[in-house]
Image 1 (cartoon, rainbow, N blue to C red):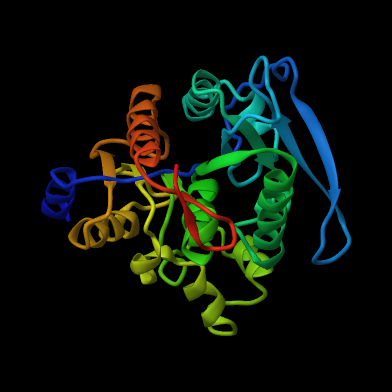
Image 2: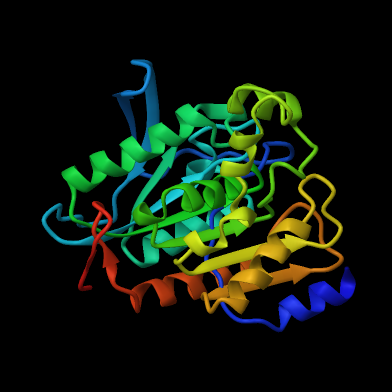
Length: 287
């Protein structure tokens, strides 16, 4: 396994999405201008929420990139908006420095893992924002559960995503063994009952769909979300010519420091800017 890690570290290019749990985190007041948005979910009529933070001097008529930040297990939409941990700060800073629209959804809140309704909510949010603003590129960022969910969503809806940053996530739900009670509730059953749902949400099985740049961070000693599946996925994506960057800390655990988060974010955003912008109907339009 160590040799595999070393080979992947030497390989090309990636894009990112992030989510974690809330233990040991510090929350601050929300940034000035953060707005809690309520909407009615098309899939079941329930009241759902996301936090929206617009860049200073925002003009809705001008094109802006959109960062969607997915929180970790046990948290909610405010994690990426308020949390002082490195993964959250670096995402906020990257969005602010590039004048991105920053959105943090509940996506069915604390134990989502990007199940059916969470998936439909994120599709709906992207659609609403595309109609409301001039959205240019869509970047998914997450850590832990959020990272897994970002990879899942990108594999299920590649036409809606231009880049992914996944920090300490999994790419294989059929293999993953932790948080199974929450995942079973989210996916609608156990692995043996609905294996197609676990496979559909496992990015490792769909590398051909991941056409966007991807950035991955991982800890070699992470037992909460072991890194093997994202490293295998990165290896395959590199072999088929995708832009992928992996930052692996072989002695690291279930966290990403600011410098590593900035490295993968910079990488993905740089490669996003060089790509054509996707039309949300599935076609491409010039940048």
